[in-house]
Image (cartoon, rainbow, N blue to C red; front, side, top):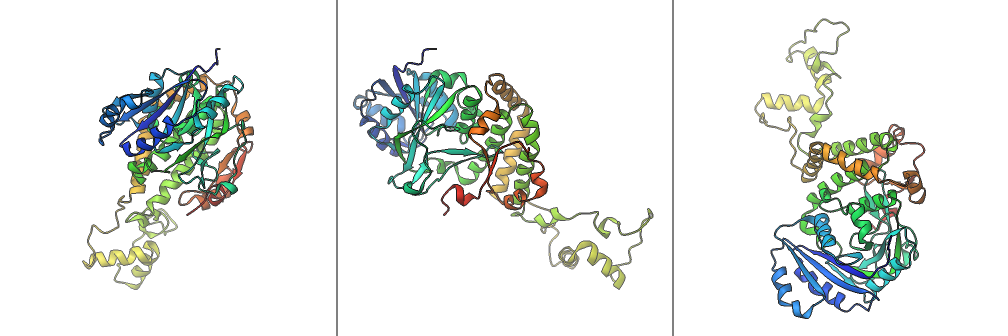
Length: 437
């Protein structure tokens, strides 16, 4: 296979980010000679801020830049796949539009990939904050259930754990990476069902299982306005993407045999998080009621015959109902009979919390697309050349309490019993992974 890099295509996706492009394209124009021919492709991803017209007006000033247009927002994954398909380069450099690459950025990526062994499909650069004082991305870690973290995110650079030049990574960051175009296409590109988030984690796992590798290029530095573009999606919409895409990443990529053993813990975690989020909704206390744990369901007798419960107006009837309903439910029922509360009180649980809505949307999406997910899993496993055991020996999976309820769940012996004993796991607290606050 010819692995020579003759030309590089820089792919920049922009959705209502014209103000970001002004800085990003200027920084690209100031790049040092990378030693190969190169071009810049910008996809105006259904913007309404006049990005396409603005770029056409400046076409003569940026002869290296090619504009690709979409009338609608294709998402990060499909948009970048479209740019990769249109690219002329042997390698594609994916760059976020809300970044400012340093002058030696592209040259460092090209040098790192061109000098790497032939089985290296991609190199990942370093991302720092806008001032260059704190880390955004150097190395990522995967969790057992398909989520991932940017290790030492927001930590001062002097305190961050950064990989060395050529050090292996489980995945490259989709906002600063150079990948061989043939490897990207052969692996299936970014999974377009993801829309955005964790698509680079999924791609990295597919590259590794397909027999290729990813390494770090510390000289390829970009400054990033963290979350500047993703904030446009909305916090709770992102929650939907995180949960859905994490499950897809785990389902598609765990090899046969291991998936069946880790699946119970993955599903239990997703279920536990959904249950914990339900606690934020009106009437959630009713979901904790066990109708067979008291006299509500007439389970207080010793025999099969129904028990005659005395009227509530008697002392015996009062005690039975107090024990069966519990103080809160007993009081609520009494107030309702007196008309102090309406029949539409929190007796019936209602989902109004946006985080909970996002969680159920993720579940709804996953259940509704089982066949497509199974087909995607089959395609990933068909091209597998490296077992997960070898991947996880290099990159152990993490167990990090992150969502409401995780701390108690992960500390439970019952949960631990569901984890495969031979699966390398690193247990860590969230504050050990990233800077909090």
